[in-house]
Image 1 (cartoon, rainbow over the protein chains, first blue to last red):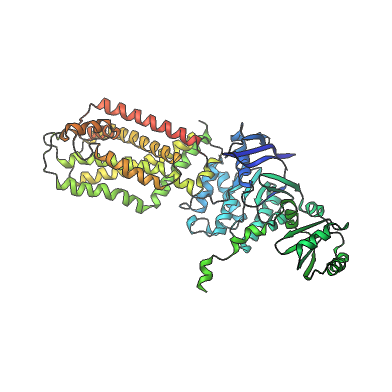
Image 2 (image 1 turned 135 degrees about the vertical axis):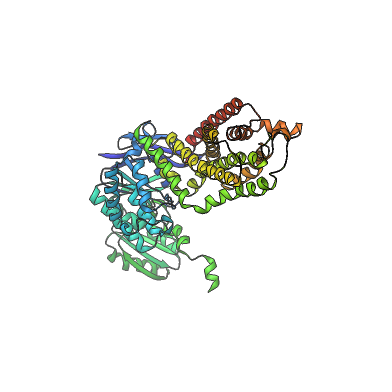
Length: 326
Length: 254
């Protein structure tokens, strides 16, 4: 049974098309990953599905309710964790949860039970009575996730749940999300631009770019789609080698990004000597060559024509200020 | 309105009261200014005789209700406008995505803002009584009604502004360019009767005049404008800003 159904969902802002006629079917109980670079239309889609933005065109049903005609029924059946923090930092963690639980109509006994339960699940029990302004980024995120499912939503929307968090915290959040999906059976719709995150958490992934969905399937099947192996190499004339390889029948596809060529083939270990031979015959020097299984990144590259990591680089790079000090 | 709506009103109110109780510095900052006005202007100019002051009424008696009214107006406006910070810090989204009507959000915020601002107003009233202002305590009953209407008017104004403004800095501009002169033209500091003729025109056009005069009339039995006009204008103002505030808020997107 589909708990999210969108048909031709579109949002325009002053002539700019942020989300362009997308169709979605999210099944009950699955973790659905919405993968795309910044500005691809992920947040806009979430805002439409959670009734915060009205679609310009098309329609969407969440838990069987129309997002435009029955917004209150949609709101009752979902939980949302936004990309930017949405906590009141002048209140304690427990008070934030209590505020939320009351807004969703839980009675006193339910509130008390449920607040303890969710605090335990995200490991915040001992810090619950501190003001949120004293929380770290990771704690805030955990509190928001806890808040998102306190009222037993049927779907939990997570918009970039680990954005800006360090690797350890990110892994902790992942395990909370998986635990939640397993234990409470909540359908999870999450957006991310981290490939590893989509790969690790999602049962199915939709790749979105420029407001359009380019592919939807399980990470495994998406990877299979592009072939069983990827050979990555660096060489003196990548463009020329790419042209040569593209005319060969056993090469499924060749992508050129940065200084590297990615060559998609079957049974890669037998193709490496052949590729080296071809390069030598054409006077092209190969400086390095590796063989690996395709990752979601290759899938992504295949569909969008650009590497996602090029876009996240500025975020992990140190600010110039610090480099000047050294 | 269903029980979920009432619950929403209650939590919105509760949140503001809790935040207010925790922000001691804000309470002090809000009370200090009228306190100084009362101390320096009220006590310093107490023996002064002005046209418009009833026989036996000191300048402090005159000033005290004005200060109470202004502090309620400012504190309420601030409570309404603080929605901008909720938007800035993302908390507004949490409220907008909840299954409660926008109306109950507005009502909750208004009641919260009114509770806070009237508390402050009463503290200032108590301070002025300590200074020796003569206040008609029986008049506190219609006075409280006036305070409530005033608070609703100003919270509504604040919400309307907050729903239309993206930038919190615009608020201080409005406060300085519009609210400051409006307070001086509201008879909060000087009686209407002591103003020159041409100044009375903007005073009569200023909505704050009726609020200040109405509250002063209740608390000191000294109206410059007939009380029914004061109350009618204030009720009208209150309905207008609450309506506009709710309308704008309903249309705003997080």
